[in-house]
Image 1 (cartoon, one colour):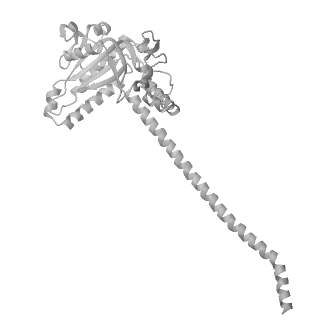
Image 2 (cartoon, rainbow, N blue to C red; image 1 turned 90 degrees about the vertical axis):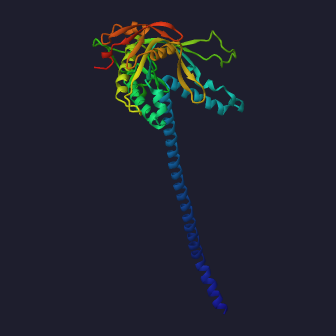
Length: 364
């Protein structure tokens, strides 16, 4: 029995290293399997995270682009760029500052675009004849659909000339400004800049580019570090933007003529052919962004009021201009004007006005 035990111990002693190596190899294989599985899983998770991160970044960039495009569609490009830049700076400041920074004045966001003076701007107003009575007798949806189609055609007319800028719609009134010079040329390949590089052809066949003019950019001094509100000695910045008052006045009149033609192709919900009045006036205006909730780009000044009066006292299907505008467009051989005489204008007294000849109201 002792010999058998000795033989067993001897065999075990001889086989132990091999068994140990096999066990060790098996352990290494098992550990390697789980380690490799874990690494593979981590690698896959990292790839998934990278994909989701990239998708998230692309989504955020797309949202940012859509938001900027929306801002560019609402405001002129220089104002939109200033709003976007100042909003970005404000967010960065809020992240780095204390909670007291949350009480910053909302108008600070608009920076230097709060007020800007423009010289010799031609304002156009259009108004639909009989719109009030029609809107009272027709379904609101039909009225809105009619206005959408009409104003879309007007928008197309505005987009055709870089002199023009659609300011706003007020009920059935459509307001356009010519000569604001709100396109800049600092982005060579920017789609928003295409219109600003367009040349206009004058009536005698020559090409004329938009000339340069000085527009006063009034800096908001009420929020500066000095703490002095309404500082009259605040610095003024001059930005050189294009504005040829003669060319822009002609562009405004042309818009009025084409607007008459476009309106005549629409039928109002009550079955009547759409007819509009057009009024034009030239003068100085101030522009700016108003409000912090649903902010709007607006024009202010007596020029706007007078242009509105030119429209309200105009004749159905005709373009009426003030004497100030007539001085600028009288030399254009494609326009034929008839002096209407002096018209009573609310708040202005009696003003000399001119009507575009009836045959000129429809473009050739």
